Image (cartoon, rainbow, N blue to C red; front, side):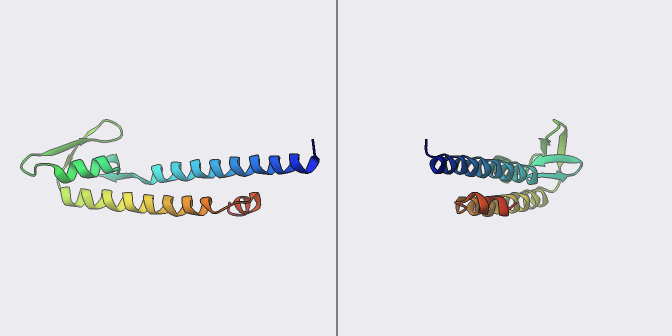
Length: 115
């Protein structure tokens, strides 16, 4: 086989591996940023939690299980939703920006320089 061809294949594999690892790290970072504390509990600010709390009947107490399966009484639903949405949008905006940057990196050098 041609040495130049093998070098190009190696660079391509390195690029794909580097980009994939960076995408995975960005996703893990975003998932970590979705966790927030409220009234002694840890919650993950995902879309299903936000929608559930927004649709909750205000005439009833809202008790949610946190990430550790601890029941937490949510006394101020508006403050909870505000904090969850803020956390969600911040994490998703950062993840989106990192993901878009990675989509445009077509060389190993660009990927490695962006560490």
